[in-house]
Length: 319
Ligand SMILES: C[S@@+](CC[C@H](N)C(=O)[O-])C[C@H]1O[C@@H](n2cnc3c(N)ncnc32)[C@H](O)[C@@H]1O
Image (cartoon, rainbow, N blue to C red; front, side, top):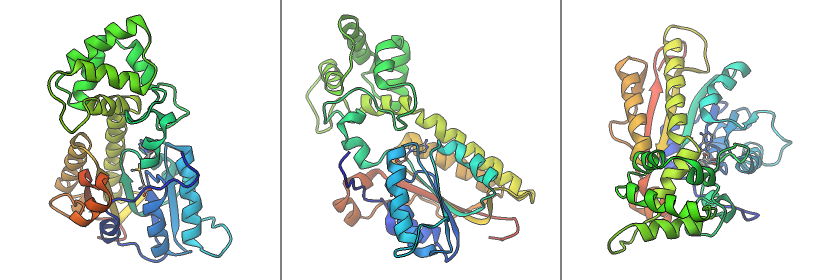
């Protein structure tokens, strides 16, 4: 990663509109990344506000903390109102509860930040030659190299189908298994080369390795499992707050989740609909919020972003 990594926060204006930050409020950024969204919100809630920053990536968390400190108190001493946590977002609610923090708004901007993908050492992209790593949390144990070289073929096929929606999964995996028996597959470029040689037909504009890389990244980081747990713990807290119990969210808390592909958006949509049906939240939009043409022109990654927002009802604060 370079000294001054950049990541353009997606749907920036729409996030501000949806979360509607007020002076002195408390914000939890479940996926702080490089702090782009959090810094914008810090400027709205001011020095009396509180910001929880959470990320699996320690490097990102450090950068986000610095940026948010500057935004909360541009000229002042370091604020004690910034709370950085290096946790899976599924574990953040437990931490908030333990710390007695009640939030007014939260955002989960799923996936990865641009500098993570652009760092060859992270092994997240077939565009660069690097180790087959793909861990967002570099203190975790399992890498893509381990999955590719040790999983049974059927398991690899399942990963490519379920997490990459790759229709050539069987063909790709047969090739991988034959190759790994000769020499272990340890780099991104070798993996990409094997996948490309296994996929039939003329090349379209999209690289044939795209789906395999997405699938392995999701598997290495258990991205869908974490999202499911996260949605489940939010549901539990919503039910508690509706019964009048004190928890980490309250009546009026705004919840926004940005997904980048249908495997993420589907469970978010399903969970928010279920919470609304149970009278726990009020959906703020019927359709997901998407990037404008102008934003897509400036930041092509925003093309696939879908944000869903709801507001907690019931409880003391009222909705
Ligand atoms: C799209 S970026 C967030 C960018 C951020 N909103 C900004 O404006 O800079 C997603 C971040 O989520 C982190 N992340 C992904 N899965 C996570 C998880 N399960 N728990 C915590 N952080 C996660 C990644 O490490 C990455 O930094």
